[in-house]
Length: 468
Image 1 (tube, rainbow, N blue to C red):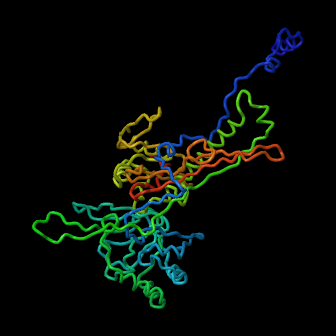
Image 2: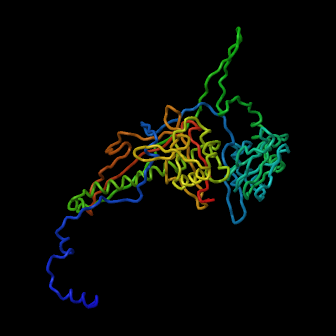
Image 3: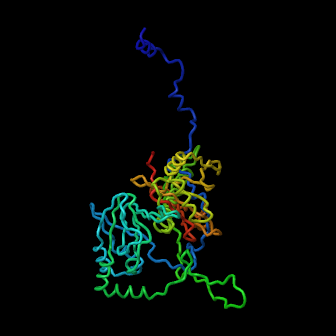
């Protein structure tokens, strides 16, 4: 008998027992709680020390710091033509706080675009500095002389950087290093001659430069803070210097940010479908999880208080070979004392692991809450998928010192708010509308503050797609 004949024969027989489809109507199924793919480990929220902020504002008082022209320049690209945003020229020390838009526009128009190939020398050590270079795209190495006469890489410039700015104020300035293109670079060049021609016709620019030169040079320490005059190692009865510690006149204040949503649940669902799981509790649980994911995203990416945007430019590093090497991680560590943690995208951690494998290095790991976390030099490297990855497959690695006592990075929140279910997170009943829908307002308040600039560092433009 064939298989088909057996099936037809079975179909012709009367059913002798209850089938499974009918039996399920009487059975109690075993159910899982609602699942959610968006939930991540959220190590940033778990490791960041939180400060309770009364009044919704946190003021960071610091010693007075003199810092000019330490920002980055923004460009506009149209096809293959690149132009500098005129107001962004105010990042140059010579144009700091200068606000004449017409003059800045003329200076921007005088910037000429030039392309450099890999290995091409842009400026040579010892030559006269008569041009300012604005790097729109690419990587440029600062080359100096090593202790034994060989070339040494002193630093790396990346997108938005500028160099040679001393040409605008000092006609006798010379290059103290050699600038060499590491990749294909697009650069805008503003010559001192063009700058002086514009200044001759613009009274406001001449007055600005005159006032700038009249400002006495301030004595500062290596961090840019006003020097505290001290005497040490003296004998006899010399005059002891007088001093005081000056503070910033307008310290930065961080206001708590907010994330909110209105959760809606129909009364019929809340009344009739609460067994074996409470529908309201599950809806709130998943909503709170989504709110926390957004909270961590904002702590990393918010342009006002996010870690990536609040890192000082002298604490931003570029990888020497594109990939995150152990040397780059050591350089990132060396920029601050007491680094407590790294934050990196999981793909960046994988790329760093490949570099370790190439060198035959095996990173140590530590057990944190039952999770094995890789470390470098004893500092844990926590995964954080909120750090963005660009279309060019580059990302950033963050290093932090945390805590108020260590003058580090702290999270900000306010405990004790009405209807609080967790610190600084509340669920408020908003009533039932005419469609019998219950409304709950779910709110989280949060922010982050960097107490001193060297508490936060970023390794930028890390390549994660190279496998050789």
